[in-house]
Structures are given as C-alpha cells and as structure tokens.
Amino acid sequence: MIKVLFVCTGNICRSPTAEGVFRRMVEEAGLEGRISVDSAGTEGYHAGESPDPRSAEVARARGYPIDDLRSRQIRSRDFESFDLILAMDQGHLGQLRRLCPPERLGRLKLFLEYAPWAGARDVPDPYYGGPGGFTRVLDLIEVGCRGLLEVLERERS
Image (cartoon, rainbow, N blue to C red; front, side, top):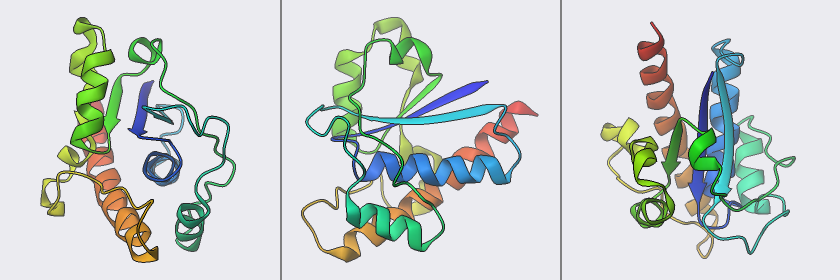
C-alpha cells in the first residue's frame, strides 16, 4: 500500500481538491487497494471544517465530490505513516521540511514535480481570488494527479 498525503495551508482549498481528484483517479485505475489518499494543512485554523464551498462547487462540477472531507492539520505521525507527502507550493514544502524528521525528508515533494509540463511549479492559493482561480487550481491538480498516477503505476510495474 502506497500512502499519499496532499498538503496546503488550511486544508480547505487545494489539498482536499487534490485528495478528491486523486482518489477518483485511483478508483478508476482499480488501485484503491494499493494506493490510499488523504490531505492535511500546515495550519489548523480550519480543523474539522468542510472544504471551501467554491472549491467544492468547482470539483463537484467535474465529478469530484469533496463535500464529505474535513480539514485537519498535519501531525508528526504523518511523516511516519505516509510514503509520499506532496506540498501544493514551495512555501508548504519549506514548512514541511522544518517539521519533518531528517530521516523522512525523502518523502516530501512538490506536487507539480509530477507534471513538469504544467507550466507552473506551485498550485496557487485561490482563497482570496475570484471563481476563475478555483478553476485554474483544479486544472493544475488534474494534470498533477495524472502525472503522479503514471509515476506510481510505472514504479509498481
């Protein structure tokens, strides 16, 4: 079982969207018994909350229901439990590196490293922008999740 954790700031926009998208892609590939998916935030100020309604609406429109997800803050045990911890942007990656035990640093990656053709290194925070930002985030997340799944399937073979 490969355990993947997506991380953004509050776990209400980017990382739950990535969790929902990747979960569906894993199911469609018939790999739900081999890959598990979760998400968390570097901060806990939204702990227990549902995803941002704008994220949920954009995701739902493309067939990714995420309304059932609840925000949580990353925990120290996550660095032990998850095989791959994917930061949505370089700021998150820096925070995760400061929190992570040195022997687990190899588990941390920037999410869009799995989609170098995406034209971006970071998934931008759509929280303070308009609806177009949430669509852009979903576009990047779909591309990144496809790249991630391809890599994981190749490594499995």
